[in-house]
Image (cartoon, rainbow, N blue to C red; front, side, top):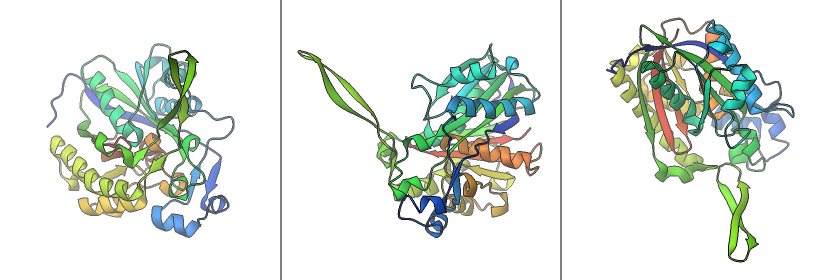
Length: 332
């Protein structure tokens, strides 16, 4: 059981950005050698949303955050802390402060957190520590990524997977602690399985002086290894988080996984003996939106009235790093 270190934590609001541009499988088949049947059978994805010419990370993240703040019954000026989980910022120095300004959350501290597709879960756990120690009362946690910026659209192994999006939650101090348990893990030895690396070239400045100039390269992934990693490690980390919460798998009302691949969701649910009707899945419409996938999926099922106050949710993110983690929380 987790010790309560001061204030409890509740998740009181959620939101997501509404991207209008989409790229379906039939459209992709005109770009690379693929088909709707090939993609859907292997991934469960039918379409993905893509940022338009006027879209940027800060505005999409702020839109999602504002929806979450409104649902929680707060105003931006009430927010103490903003944590932006992203791997694709508008500015490499960070985009969280831009989101703060966009929201008008003038008194909030803001910073970026990078843990790829695990980023939202890592950010939730980070936010909880500030709340439990009494430092902050109202925290916005955002997951936002524009992976279309770094997708190789000639590589059918990866370009069929990724989409853009942003989702957010509000976490608040409360008498009752509704973050029941968590577990976070990393293994840098597996970094080569999924990466977006910087490639540089030396540029001579003067005699005996040179610097590195370059840019980041498109996403590369060993899909087979990532699949094997996910179906083994994700059930383990969820079970460990449940143990810390003093719960069992039959106590879970909703399994909320990073929306990477429908086959991964099915395999994890089968190993945990969780029926498919309790597994949240929206990847058919969104694809893999990295750190945004969990909060977008949560927002959809909450606004559809499926998730009720007091429902127990097991959320788990997994991806590049490699990183993985799980958080068990009650909604509302």
